[in-house]
Image (cartoon, rainbow, N blue to C red):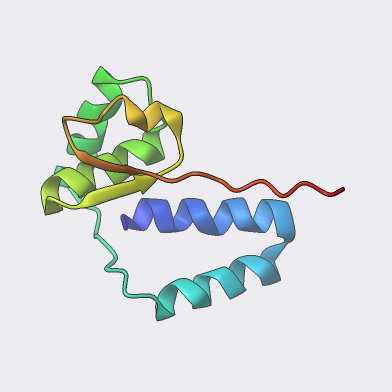
Length: 101
């Protein structure tokens, strides 16, 4: 996971559920077998190239660049990133919807 994407998860959770929830999610992530991918000039420019050539969010471009560099599978439910299939390995995530009767 790119450090940029860690920040994205943190702020998005905080906006929706408040800072305590964001801190809790951050602690859960620390416990998972996830390596945090550093960001330097090379990573910024690789992400910028994805953003330059594809209609994706800038933070998503960091995820794509990290997946490409690490030859890793990018797990996403974001349809914008599905366009990168074939350029990087993508595993589509699907949200389950619960229906109340």
